[in-house]
Image 1 (cartoon, rainbow, N blue to C red):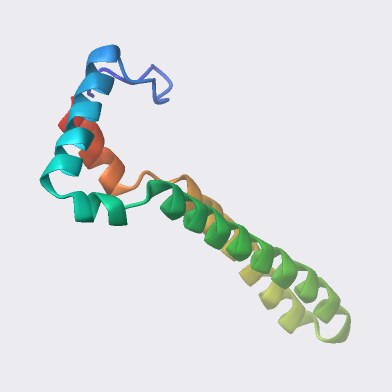
Image 2: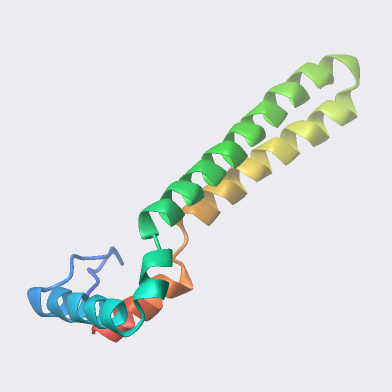
Length: 111
């Protein structure tokens, strides 16, 4: 355990020293390779992740409803489609909330 977590395993804000170190790393990256730094747009990456997650979750909800409607015609097909939609919603929610390896690398470099 790296000391930046509470008893419930929740993330805590960076300390001033850690934030300063992270800012130095970012500044060094921009100075060392400005072309690469310009191509890495974290805001765009986050928006893309959010849109993909929302679309996947919506598709799962649609499958859930379609499965419910299909149950009226053929029970087995409706149940399978509904379960697939529900599992898709859970998978997308898990994908959206998981910790990404690059976040861990940045945190370790700052600490």
